[in-house]
Image 1 (cartoon, rainbow, N blue to C red):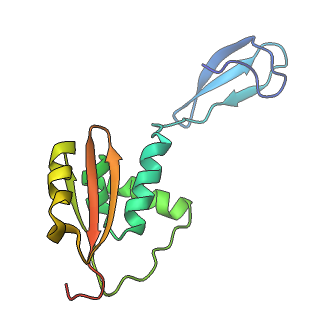
Image 2 (spheres, rainbow, N blue to C red):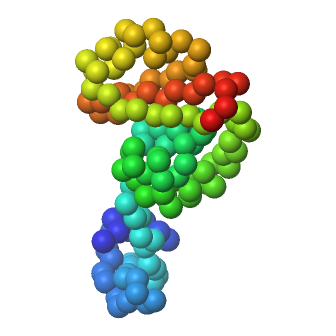
Length: 139
């Protein structure tokens, strides 16, 4: 139930039926009828930012969905909402791996795993995701 009337800001409001499957309210002070927009599920800005970063790194919607646990349709709507365009990356495709801290340290300790590649490491809760891409090499 809303806190106050959007017209007069008074708190004397009551339910007054349903219109188009939405609850209707009446302000008893100014006799104003109104409905309240459904807010929907709020996703933390942290996941939105991570999703957009992963998209810019070249991952697909479904790959992002599997990594951060948000629907690929939601990821698509974020990209449209923020008008994100991915730069052309025709000569490489990123590969990602998820590690625990000790696994990541072992992987990085081996120089052949990181030499000659672009590398990005980002935190996801208690794990770390590494995105690696090899420039100027065939897929």
